Image (cartoon, rainbow, N blue to C red; front, side, top):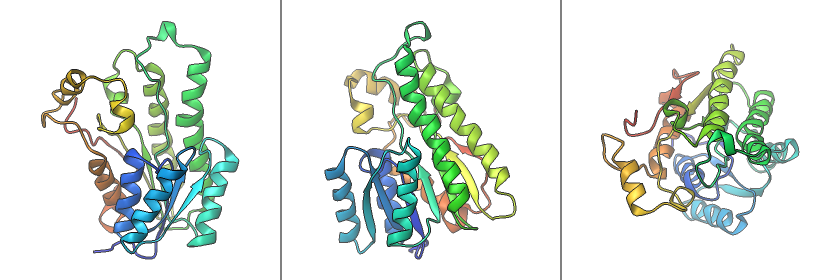
Length: 248
């Protein structure tokens, strides 16, 4: 059943991985989707083509979701093509390509991660707070690392911890507007980015950290997003949902 018919969704970083799965799922549920990319234009156009082939509506928009101008262009594109954005999924994010202890993190590495994962997400939320109509839905993508506090992930985990605090506070600031604000905190999800530099042994070890004994797949996270932005998720607000297979 297309529960999101008539709704417009902006999904940042949706040319691949979790973002792509979210865009496809929301389109399948009836939403018109703004597919955002920064460098993967070909991949983003492929997502749009896949949505259109299934009878949905989508547009690819190249924009840096860590900049104010880029963020505004996403909401502008939504309004131009489909009407005001009812849904924001803050998915765009980056991580360092290897584990780095605090003593070895450079200022450049710190600033790079926080500019996207923290500042960019905040600016997206600011724009959404101003432009999403009453009754809208906002979902931020965090990480289970905020709870696990594993060595080597200090900068990434801290940037996502900020996202969780933004979530809780904005949900209260939207009082009286029937706008829910939640975060999803995935465990390890098998994507191209996740697989980079990891051996099968490392991947199996991470899968074994969950009682379900498997890695997540992008569709697992997309399903959680679909619940939170759909009719059945309307009473869930200001929460961090740990979609991680039970990883503690």
